[in-house]
Length: 217
Ligand code: 5GP
Image (tube, rainbow, N blue to C red; front, side, top):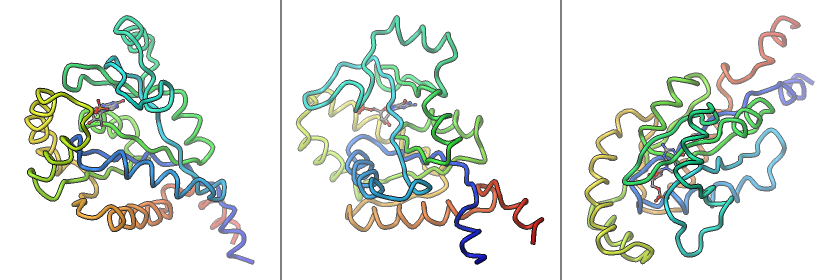
């Protein structure tokens, strides 16, 4: 009986951030994580926050799915109109998280996954400190990171070089994250992320109905 009551307690959705330098495996991890929750019960689902960006679309990317690709004028308009939960310049481009979608999801108890950089993570932490869980993904080595970036073959040599330079700067923020994982093996890393998520969902601060429940005991 008490177990049944507990299962029905209302929970706020959490903001689950995966950050890493490009090429550390974050995109694959995000996709697999979302797929693993696709058939989950309503209170265990997770959706991806689709960012807005001014960078050009890469081969294989889908507008509205990987990003909302916009020009700088539209981006500036969204920032000025207060439509972004966070926004930042990363490399030569601008990125931002549309706020409305995220608010809707967390208020109905659905977790939201973010693939954003350290600047966005800092802004979200300042805005929603109680709802945020952040995970930083490290590559096993810088050589491996470069190999993965080259294997991706989506970017020119010059861009790969720039991304390697920026990777170091991104990695320097690792201590600002709640969890730090070395992505040696995708399956193992995914299992660790799943463990983090399951434990974080059980935190008392996220269970909105807990005080009423305890009061009624
Ligand atoms: P890419 O151009 O390779 O898709 O992404 C470059 C970087 O921008 C990645 O580190 C990614 O996490 C970050 N990024 C993507 N979307 C957002 C966003 O909405 N906000 C912030 N702050 N960073 C983002």
